[in-house]
Length: 205
Image 1 (cartoon, rainbow, N blue to C red):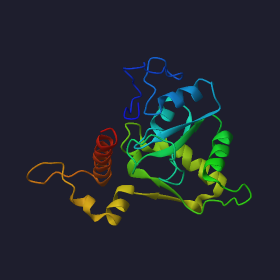
Image 2 (cartoon, rainbow, N blue to C red):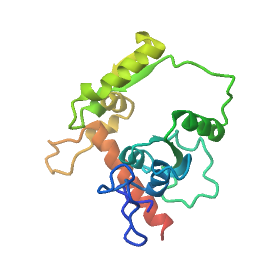
Image 3 (cartoon, one colour):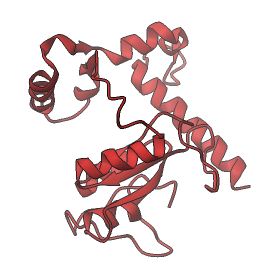
Image 4 (tube, helix red, strand yellow):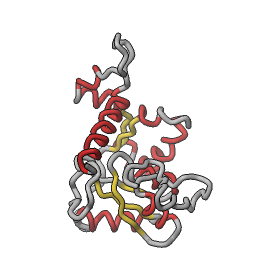
């Protein structure tokens, strides 16, 4: 199941999405997301390479978190794409999500630091068919209420990545004349998918 972004499984059957029984549950960690969404467990772990935890969390209507790569040991995990595989987790209750995170990330409950910066990547939200303002206003209001307006900034993630990785600007979509280009985000997404495909072919033989 670790390769399906939709969570469909022809061999063992596709898990039923508790939030919408006529919809797919999302993958690759669809079983974990379904278990949490269905109330079978308080939390569950999953593997996220390029969305394997975050996508089913969104599809099934539960909280899902993917930390940075390699901050949690992958010991005992069957590798899919080792340079991308990351252990993440699901929960319905934000308090449970936080507690699981503290345990897995080995964080101290006494050393609590408030965020100094909170960035909203406007160009990421513009990809959605839903108006960006509608998606971001809830987050914006919550951040301003909790931490103040001074910590909040709007950024263009594609431009930021291109400034740090100049080769993204030259990433062609394959046309011979090179006139048409991917955006930086599309280029990065394509590169990650190619890397994942390569590593899967290596690990699976």
